[in-house]
Length: 240
Image 1 (cartoon, rainbow, N blue to C red):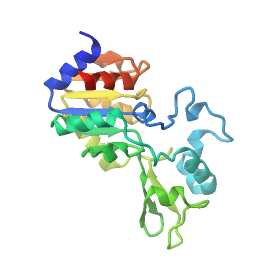
Image 2 (image 1 turned 90 degrees about the vertical axis):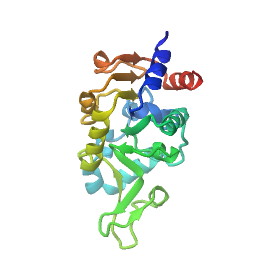
Image 3 (image 1 turned 30 degrees about the vertical axis):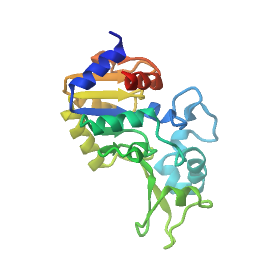
Image 4 (image 1 turned 45 degrees about the horizontal axis):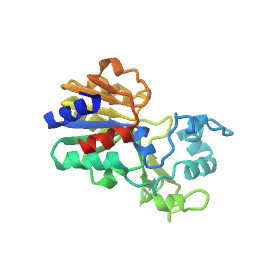
């Protein structure tokens, strides 16, 4: 029995599945990630990516922040891929209980998945710092220079920037979902970003599965490790 068949048997057996993912899910939708060979960390900018996407840059150098953010973080036109579709099927089969994601593209919710905990926020939610009026992603990405509210306040994305903490409510929901899961599938993440990666330590269920092209620091804890392209894995899963 190969590893993907073994994963399919786990999925068939368990009715409390949580899916925890990172950028590897989104790259299948054409969204650039941070750490791959052509990712943002391997591109040359005037300032480090961590600064350009930091709260410090947002509040002290807002125009430069938005120049960078609008150019490199606009994934509003991205479409769902085979992974999102497979997860929706698991939800429809009453197996998938939640998705915990480090991605900000909102594609899990776009697919119609119910319990999605977006650890790093989403580009789709934006609000005025002055009056708290809400704005969608198109208002922000189509704005000229700094997006301004009708009240005159600056609009901020509900994305967790470097230097900011994860929303307590979202994090607590993620903790609850992972700690109660019987099968945790971790996919497309290097598991190097804190505090998200520490959530793996809270899993106390039956099977921990890690699917990633490269090794992760948690492979030794997993019941099953699949080092393969996510598209290959989920295409095979879908056909089993």
